[in-house]
Image (cartoon, rainbow, N blue to C red; front, top):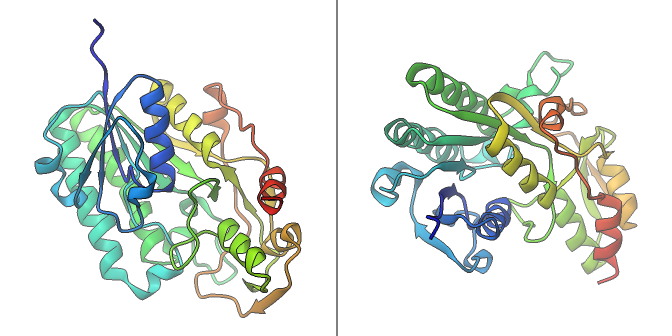
Length: 289
């Protein structure tokens, strides 16, 4: 009888993490999820996954096993809201990821780290770079450097991926939500959507199943940094509102506002990955349900 490979997913009860856990189980992995349920939900639990509740700071105690592969997705992940709670950001993203790095050093498994594409955003007109927009963007940029350095210092296998505005089933609305689902909730309630100015900056939107597929390809073949995961579909908030048929309540720009995204997916595509889902199709389907 073949022994199952073990995969660990931090943030496994979250939006992206739950889809990743589901796919890993289908691929025949034994899967452990570590989640503190800050934005994760027990409603996202997948049959066959071993769920452990706790902070990534305690990963050594909570996940003593040695996996073949670890996916570190369990971090704080909102740019603007992070301005209101930097201590929470640094607790989850800095202290937590330091502990994950040490846990990884002891086990020498392959680590797939989910970085933030804000690191590569072009500088604003005032000279502020994407990595310096908020405590979130800064912590994520530093963590990519931490992971790369740990790999070099201790000869550890790794790959760093970068997400671009992931959408799909189980997406959050509310304080920690993302725009596709927030606008959908506006659509359902028949209310205007809030757009921070100028509203013309574009973002690339990537379906969660395309994102998970890329993570598996990167886990298998990827080595090193700069594995962007993005669809080639780009929309501005105003165009997104138009897809939903929403009235727009235009607000002043946020302090964390940034220009249109720069998308770099060459290394991921070179591994054989291509996105297959369309945001326009997804929104059309959501509107009809």
